[in-house]
Image (cartoon, rainbow, N blue to C red; front, side, top):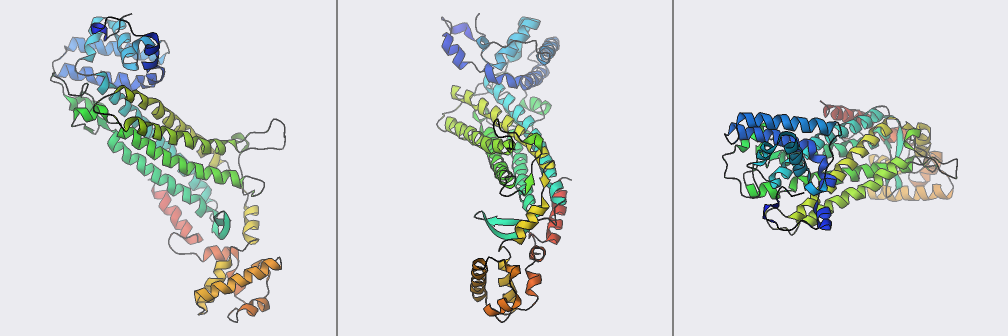
Length: 457
């Protein structure tokens, strides 16, 4: 079987070379985008007088037939035709005859594949943004229900100060909001048309690149044909945003693993997002957050892989750039699957308020508030800090917590203590009093929820 490009060759392609250089094993995923780009291209060819209207209609009918067979699963892709572009063109020629060969006038596979990837990544970036919003809504709903639920806040994974559980959850809402913003911003670089740039230098045909860009709903056209076919920044930018987002998802996943452990018991994940053990019947393993945590590494790897592929390439197109697709597809599919699992897992999560309340009542995370209390009594903060350190040490030695000490015991450390110290030390008061903007006080958390709600408008 002769290649569509085989006119100047005297020998067939080595079988191993043919298998290794063919990309149809993965770029078949661009089939829909390839047909969309071809439809726009042939309409432009007719408008520019390069093909006749009759030829245009024949080719469009042929592309529709190919698209229907594709949808019905009736097409068999061949490595002999190398990639999705040549496979589609071969199907088209089989469908309508030699006139199908006119479709490729005024374009190259270089600008064709770039167009397909711009379309594919635009479609999926928009889909990922919608999925991010679903996770944000799930977090928002849980936060809205847990403004008054208290949880230990940690630094160095040591209990630091009690916080509203809603405040803790909303941290991830805002992380994802930045992720969403990065993805939205990346569309500015993704939604550019390379179609018509040719192999690298444009074409001698009087094409109208702006017409195809408008039909494909691109915002603008690459002004430089070499840049159009060699640019993969838009993929790198998506992968970078995806890597940051997966890092955020991994951090949340780690907390879900910890919180659902017997040691914490702060939350319980729904059975549908956990698995059991083959030999230990009591086990309920948080497999989903563990998988999300692990899959962050493959998204990072895809980014580093493409950066490495591109780092030494001369202009314009090189076969190395065939390696841009598998990592892009894998990143898209990994991120979409992660978000699709994360939203319902958070929605169905049970919050064990009793365990959280117990945790904030049996630690020393209210110690900072004693220092603040003494400062209001005109005691210098550094002096107050030392006083509290001694109080905590004494309480630990006596196996007590700060609310267990008597007023007389407090006065032994400083005469400024009064009976109101016990109100100050209540976890609910510790949280409520942090009423500065962005703080964990319930009033501020409700204000934060109002701001979060606006992001959905």
